[in-house]
Image 1 (cartoon, helix red, strand yellow):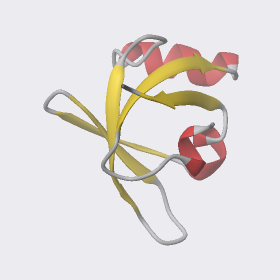
Image 2: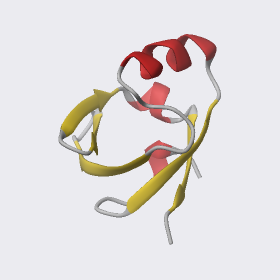
Image 3: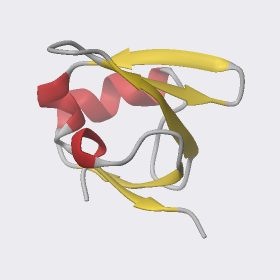
Image 4: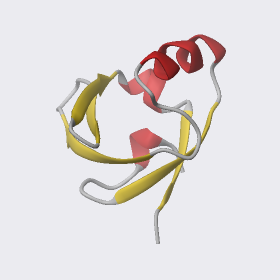
Length: 73
């Protein structure tokens, strides 16, 4: 599933980032395949706020569609 369709408040693992420009930007924030994140909130008509450890990052909806995640077991 992609980040845009993932459920809130679940622990998620990033599987891949399918957009090369996004991958470069995400790496600057320490977001890459294998990282554990969770969705803090999905703002109506706006970005998705994710959290990695103590850092929160807002990601646009279109870019979130390019981030493949899975629910961490």
